Image (cartoon, rainbow, N blue to C red):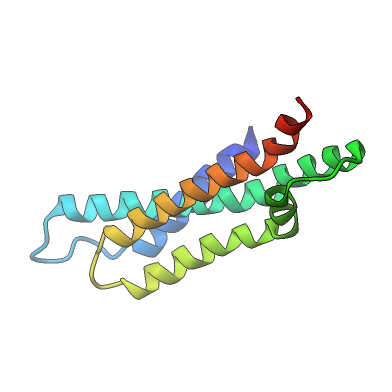
Length: 134
């Protein structure tokens, strides 16, 4: 349970620290609130995806190694590049630095969508060998 809380709370705290500049003059508070929410969501999803790649996928890799069966190509690619999932967090941080003055919500919404699409691929790749056994 502690790991789940750290995965959720650390990126949100980091997003708050990165985005914290007070309320600029002449902008609405709601735009800033949405910006911070999308930034924190993008950071949390990206960090969760990276942690999922490091911890959960390695457990699946050990289980499938004990089967001794051939793995589908998607699963083999996922096992080979599971640590690359941390790059989404790096990309989110770089994006935050790029749009530092604009408070644009769209890039972070796209990062959230990309994280969810990648997570869907990860789930498919993890369960594809199980479906081929049935």
